[in-house]
Length: 547
Image 1: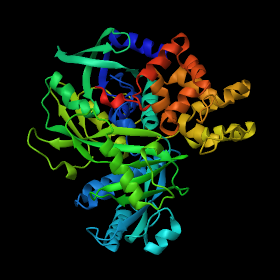
Image 2: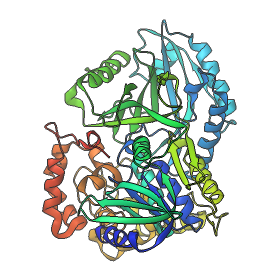
Image 3: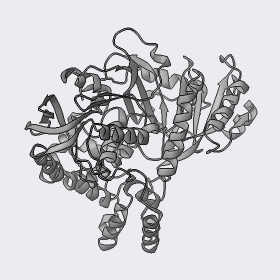
Image 4: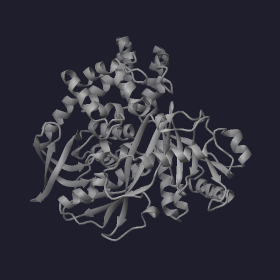
């Protein structure tokens, strides 16, 4: 989709947009999707790839904030539970209920039954939308999850929340793709240099990070949705705000599957914070840490790895301890936590992920702080309301901008898929039937994709060994998903580099052909660019760079 990117970059300086959004993470993506669907002329830029920073390094959990019960933030929990339920109803193929299987060690600050009563309150506040919690004795825990060590257990419980069946970056990108379908002019790898208000119009100077081309973008309103870089952009734009960010670093390690049960195993780590063992298809995701850092740029340290591995080995009864050699891939990102006021030290451990939107009515300027995936629909709706208050017309203000295609489209897709035997093409490396994955990832576009397979059976072949992605998916990514670097596809449009070891990806004979589909005559250069982005251990180093 390099041609679409170039076409969009050419369009950016040619008109006055209603809104320019800077930042293509979850906050920027839903803002663009909501506004474009309601008829607003929107431009969206990001200095890196869409969902290239915090929004591709989450735990993939869309939860209602059970941990905030301990700090008595009942209003926030109530709001997040309502948002979680709405998200599950709106995206039933993507945001699914999952059981959390929690073990409480002896000597924990609360007895297990008291914590269990908190899950009952959580279930009630969640409007009974999920399955009821169950209390578990150590013996019951062992019978249900043999991998859990019960040597020091006082008890535990099961309760429900939700998670993203696919990866977080893919979920975010689908909002970007939706905004483009409604006319948004979006481009990744376009970085903002500075913006200035002139005669009622924001004049923003940006730079194409690939070609070096300077671009001037004009807009009636400006939305700073740059995630952990919101403060930095506000400083450049001379904006004073009520909120700013502090940062908590979270890391995850991905290893081969530890348990066959599709449950999130939940513990309290050595330092008392929540620790998860999360299903990820054929793999398992371990984490997370919660470390205060001063800057958005972060990386996984040896101490981080040791913390995660030591807790896993202590809490699980594994056949052999996990070591660094078992790590297939790593995730590392910062959580931008909104705090009110400037200066001073916050009790950042107590800060929640609730979002805040600061507004400058005189200059039609919004800054979005904090936030979490669970609340994303609310963010999109709130932004649309604020933009209307700025005096910008929303011609289709009542248009629903989110959710999966309606049931008639889904029935048509599943009917065609069944007629052609699509599930028979499911690769052995896939953790789910092909029909289910195509619908969840591509929606109504999946109908055209199976027609391409019908017309040309080669489109149904697995191209990159050990992955689950067919040739038709790579063709689709090249045509419609603005893949600018190989990492964009391997890490964010797909999750190949999260579940396949780097040495296996690089050794796959189909990788070069995939590059040719994605990049044409730039294929070899893009492959070498990707190899150069890996450190000595074969780990992508995107997050240590400035976004």
